[in-house]
Image (cartoon, rainbow, N blue to C red):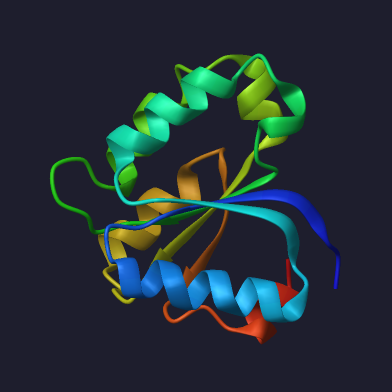
Length: 128
């Protein structure tokens, strides 16, 4: 399994964040894992580190269903970030929902590499 230098988890559910972090740590998936509980926090953080290339995450695991701004709102705002961030970060959408409308939006977004169903597993990480 490839080891990534930096991964970002965005999910309002702290238990999901804890489980996903532990799965990544146990499997040696990433050297550094940043966990944020909202789209707003994630966008602010990405904006603050945009000029520090080694801090920009290679992978972003993004929950779809969150209060206030959801995963699709994040994707719209992500498009406005500098190219250095957009070109380095691949987004993996996470959800327990298999809503066909959501899956269609995910499939047509250029920044989304793949949809992964919750809960995240070591087997899913191995496919990345």
